[in-house]
Image (cartoon, rainbow, N blue to C red):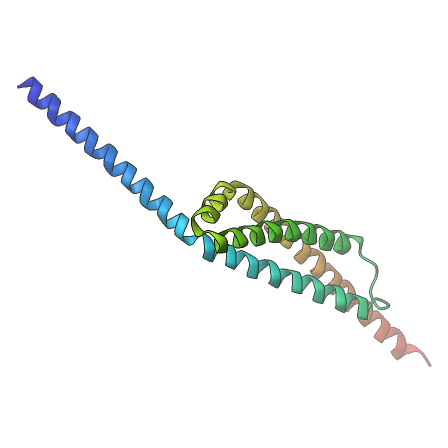
Amino acid sequence: MAEVVASALGITTFGFQIGKKLYELRRLYKEFSAVPADVEALLVECARFARIIEDVESQRNLIASCLPSSTVLDECCISCKAVLGELDGIARDLKSRTSKSRVKGSIKALLRKDELSKLKEQLRTTKEDFLIASQIMDSSSSYSNNNYSNDNKHSP
């Protein structure tokens, strides 16, 4: 009787282990198959944010005479560009690899998952800094413009 119970327990444990491994394989397959779309989304996000930075810099250059200089905004732009460049380079490399060989490229992407996560977090942080610096510059610009308008109204 004890042998039958021990065998049943062994079979049950083995069944749970197989189920757990199948679940892990299924999760890995989902990650694996999502790599090309994830890489493409990352490239789109990098391109969009790079255009935002360019627009802010262009606008800032157009109205530079009205704005106080902001080394913080400049530093944020430089920081954002650095992280974007690194992230974009990795994403382009992975896209190239997945287009050549989906399997090898996806494996490479999964192996660099931690590095990508770290860079995405850095990008999120630099975006927040950039947003704060931009808002400060907007506030400074509004304040400067109001003072300029008020000074001109009182001039004879």
